[in-house]
Length: 460
Image (cartoon, rainbow, N blue to C red; front, side, top):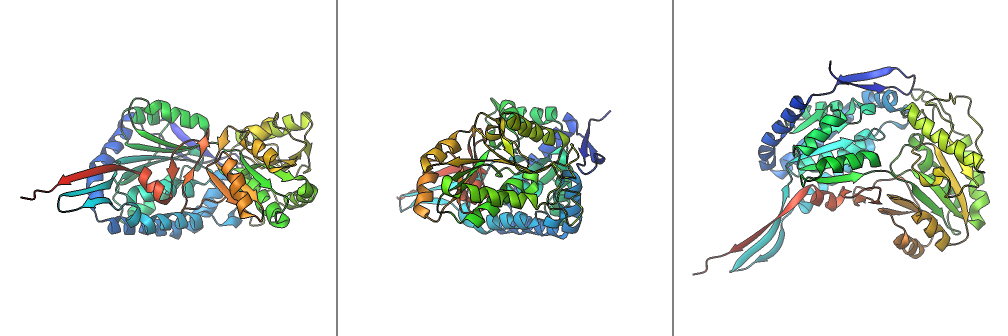
């Protein structure tokens, strides 16, 4: 009997969608078709590839009225936020706009004696393993530039958002991207590992857990297949004594709680300099107490259920352990907190880095807030983490932000904003957050390989 992949809706625990996982033979056949199609796709003019990809993006936009409630049913994000098409389109559009320059030859010499230059060559077949928390935006980060660069793409989506890959493939094929150039697949972990170990792909992009990233690297060991990973995070916010207090509270708490805290670059810990600490905490608590937890299909709901019961159980465990160790919880239990996927968003104080809630990834609607006395103390605490994706610094002094940012071990430094992915900058991390980089010019460089030409001219 076929292995079934099931999406369990966090709204009510029902099976929202299911698909049979492909067996080894079907999976390797799909990879072979992608490899066969790649040369012809890469031979098309760059502008043609760009136009087809952007037409596919537009087709996804045309589906938005269907996609928004579908996302709510699959992973719990409230419909009031309108889905992901804004960011999806922004990222694809930026990568389309910079493609010609990013993929251009690098000229070294063109003289009567020599012509020397470096070309950017597509890897071949790119395998994208996308997560459920921002399923369209995280997928397009790699899908769009990989296709534009001349690769073929195979997309495997998380089971929690089982239908996203189907929607994207449907849209891109309707726009004219050939079926074998962009394929959506349904795979279990074992077949996924077999494909990678079997050199079915030339490049693997994985966004997900640290454990998942380890599994990808192990599967690729000895194959020399490049693996790019964006894994866990425990992103800090630091409010300095000269910060815009209202903006800091509003943005950092939104960064901690939006999408029920299920954001790769969500704010999971906040450090506030002593002069602003009490006022910041008061504002933060008032913001969270104003949330409405409930059915994500209700337009009045501002925070929906977590995507899966086990995710909510882990957040509850971290909160309970912290409170037992002396932390103070500031948000009374919401009436709609059912002990399952519907979880009261929580702010904790009197926390320390001996508590899991301040050190391990929570990936849920909880944030710990600590008082600090100096930049040096804040830097030490921000760096006391196995992760490094983003850090959000709040100050009116750009030079101070640059100085503090230089000392923080992170992939992105924000000043006076948080929880945003700028497609013009490289999306990257350090430590256990993974390695590699997406979007920007660097994203194109990672999705291609350099090929050098050293041409000696016959002069006589």
